[in-house]
Image (cartoon, rainbow, N blue to C red; front, side, top):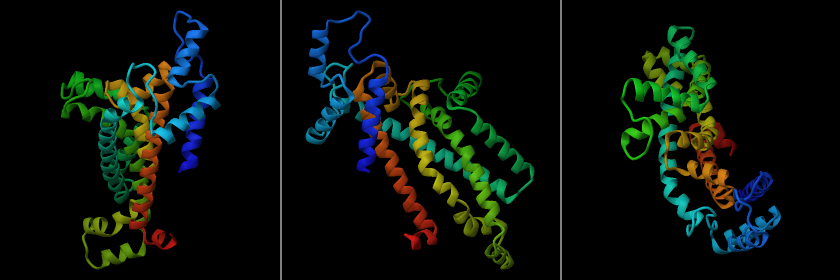
Length: 296
């Protein structure tokens, strides 16, 4: 994990310095002496290698992510920590919705191949995979907020505000999960032990829920690590679209303002979350699949 974090910090620093402009660039040019004084005050040298050294020293010695360059008197932690629960709550609900919708559609299609339910589920999945987040979000705004008046268009602060951005994040991943669950269900329903379970007189619903489902969702569990990463990074766009005060807004503002500390801070937070989700997926696979447990 440590080499990954070092690589992330190094590549992000290099990309930020390669972008046009700098944190102290203004419409009216400032004197070189003033810019040098600002760089010394905020710890932003002129080269990416020097900034990498300053940032690592600040992170390892002081445990600090540094000052926010565009918000006077605030550190990067002061900006990101209040926004973290918002992004985690939104991402957690979106992940739950993606799994619930995707597994129901996929298993329903896999247990009735070539039926109308199969064709309808896979048609919806194809639409969900094809559309980007901002198109889905705009469509939900028009349908649920403007036409039906069920939910507020945007904003944050109440239970009703969370559903539309969560659905926007969830639907593309629910489509992929539905296709994986359908494939897994089709394969497992052909196994001999499923035929044995049917021969014992168990109902089809009991065969699916007690015997087939646990194996059929293994491809879905493998996908959840990257899916969690996609949902969290996808929240950059969705949080901006719906005006949500999460970490995504700070990443976008940091990139626009060339606030190196804010961009690096959000990247580090998301890298830690992605590592956590991938570890959780490995543990879940070992629990669900005895072959993976024996191999480990």
